[in-house]
Length: 99
Image (tube, rainbow, N blue to C red; front, side):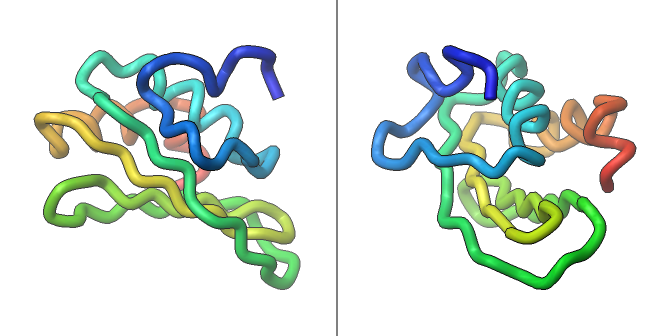
């Protein structure tokens, strides 16, 4: 993981473990100006499978699930305009390849 990726006011301080497949996603999300906070969720083991990213809109945040080779991790992205944040994420070529 890149040193300093999880630093700054956009990340909650309670949990900082990230699966390797989610590092690129977090770097992209951190770079979006509309994002106010990123909450890093639990890691759940799962059987082997393809790497995927699912984005769903909750009432106050975007819920993003990153499926790695052997684990799933959920992130919550908070910001003012959730649809604009989702569009920025979907248009990013790194994330687009994994949707």
